[in-house]
Image (spheres, rainbow, N blue to C red):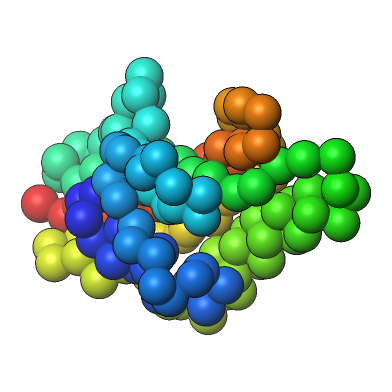
Length: 138
């Protein structure tokens, strides 16, 4: 699942095309991206009598950007995540989902805004938490 989510996120037009998207690893470079499976959640939302399941996959998308006292730099970082959230919403509205065999996608979207997750003197890791829901038929 995580690989398909990574492939899907890599189609976002706001990402730097020359930067790879890692999985569960954020490179030590500024302008790095990572898709990470969230921890501590039940993937099964509901199950019917026939054994069909409504499932969820919670993940975060992280990016490392320059962070400093320049207001415009920090505004631009926030705008990036606003655009990413809007891209997910537009894809959800248009039925554009990760292509995963054996499931029926239901929705995808952000469940938080982009926020600063960690910082050092001149870099910040920004994170946005997301949810992909789907049906797994028996």
